[in-house]
Image (cartoon, rainbow, N blue to C red; front, side, top):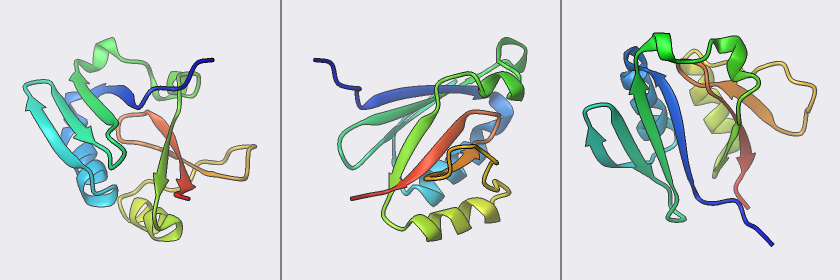
Length: 118
């Protein structure tokens, strides 16, 4: 049997660095474990990590192509409060056929959904 690992990477244009910091540090309250020239690494409470790699926009998918990429799920303590924070940052929920979770487009294109932490 295989398990999904606790580590992930997203790739976005350099211009989105501050917005990803606002998202990861301000909304998700993650600790930044490393800051490299082209990457920030965040640590989750369960020991997992998220690397945000900053690249030349010409090397990245279009926002439309991000719909076909892997999507992340973030479990949060306060689902409705987190949704409110995302909306305040200009990230309204996406319209998606699967209605049991709320989906969002992160800065620069990657898509994620929120789930209530159990």
